[in-house]
Length: 268
Image 1 (cartoon, one colour):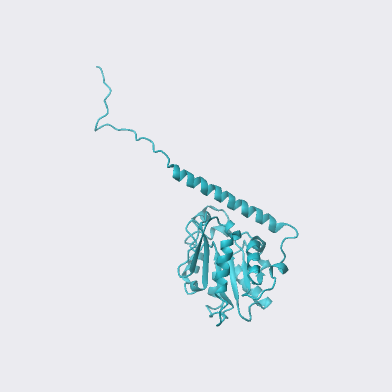
Image 2 (cartoon, helix red, strand yellow):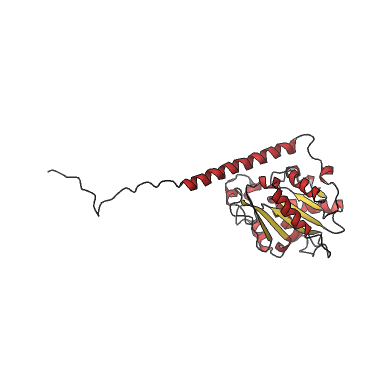
C-alpha cells in the first residue's frame, strides 16, 4: 500500500517558529551587566583602599564642623573607610563625622551592631547637646532604623539618611550562602520586625539608585522621604555628587530651631 505524506492543513501540528530575541531587551540586559560589573569593580577598589596602610584615620574622619554631627554606619562587609567619598562630602558641608571602629567590616547581626553604635555614642558622649544624625549604607540603613525604633528613648538620634538600604529585602539574598547576607531575604524575621515599626519612618530619608542590581525591589520606604537618583548601582552611588546633595539637603532640614528630636521607643 502506498502512503502519501499528509499536506499541512487545519488539523496538522506545526512546529512554532522560534521567536527572534528583542534587540532592545538584549541591549538593556548588556548595559545592566556592564553597570553591575563597574559597580563591583568600584566596591573591590574601595575595599582594597580600606585595607591599605595609611588609610583614612578615625581622627581625620571626625574633623570638626558646626553642622549636625553624623554617625556613619557602613554596609555588610564594609568598613567605615569604604564610605570615604561620603565622609568628604559631609566634611565639606560642615558636619563632624563619627565612626564606630568596633563594627569592623560589619558582618555581625544587625541587633548587635545597633547596640554597638548606641554603646559608642554613650561612651563618647556624642550628641548630648543637639542630637545626632545617622547616615547608613545598605545594611547600615537597617541598623539605623533599629536604633531609631529601639535605642532612642532620649531622642539622641534625630534623623536617618539611608542609602540603598534593603528595607523590603532582596530576593537575591536567598542565593548567597552567608548568614550575614541571607537575613536580607524578604519575609525574614529581621525585616518583619523592622517593617512592623512604622512610626519612625517619618524620621528617615531613603536615597536610592534608580536601578540597584543588589536590591531589585527598590529601597522605597512607606512613610519616609524617598529620593531616587537617576543612576545604576549599589556601591557607585556613594561617590555620586547627587547623593551628596541629597544627604546634605536632608541634614540641612535639621538645622532649624526646635527640639533635637522626639523620643521614640525605649531600649530593647
